[in-house]
Image 1 (cartoon, rainbow, N blue to C red):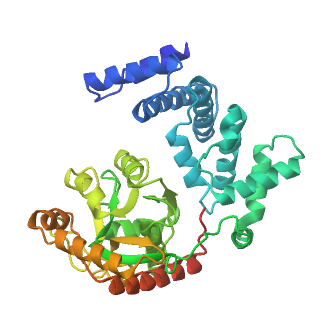
Image 2: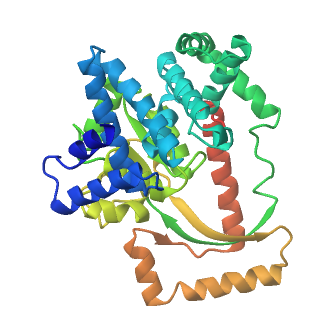
Image 3: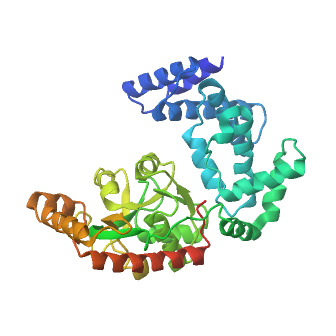
Length: 397
């Protein structure tokens, strides 16, 4: 009965092409056979499961909000049991909800993580996207339950009690070395050459109610915490730059970190996260195809490929108007003659017209500076971002 309902849903979507309907049907068949699913197939099956289970729950008299939440959990459990895979939509939701200031959202994320781990015995070694704050809620709730499974009320109570004291506990963990980074980037490496500086961009899903910077700022100020943004990962330059933006505008958005720009862009283009802060070269193709809308760029002046998009400097946020840098470093203590030879070789390469053109087409600016200039820049950049980390109380979570 369930698979018949799924197939009916997946093969009767409005505005879907014949190829899409066929692909939906094949995804449902693969799921029914317990096969591993591709990311696209996972989304198809998960959406179908959520839709069918939500309808059933509402028909049984459950309130819509509770029905949707129950359907998310039920769909995840079914996919884990059937294919051994956790849907990306679930890990994204857990990541987003567990970084919210709303205790109910935090409790929901901890509950979803617990449900996944109860469903799959191997899940204790798996990253579900739960933040360190969410893990803290889970640990305390389990300790209080004395070995039994915590109830939803247990998670909610702990999440409400933690409130703002969670940062104190996280800071303690960091100082104990559980989250601390070992090493010094200024002394553990030898700077060789900074090749190019690259603009960064905030881009939006095209179907959002705003499609320019002014609209975005008004929306995030009006509804703090409603909008989330994707980044290539915790501690990435665009993560830290968005924290700068939040400081400068006194706004709050939920950070959803990914493992690289690729998966972050995939979900941004699909509308899974409304906003993304990314390096321009990786986001630009999607912007040109109008699958993302550029709102503001971090660059010395407007980017030729995006002449209508303002810079942060134009908008009064010069502190956020920072570029990413791509350079070469070597191991600590690299002999100076080796450093100089590599530096000279790279500088010669970037003078090639074809290579220069390829780099500059992405909006990047060729730097090709000296090892000493690169070392100075590294010191300055580290000081800036360490200040952001301290002010925003960021951790590796």
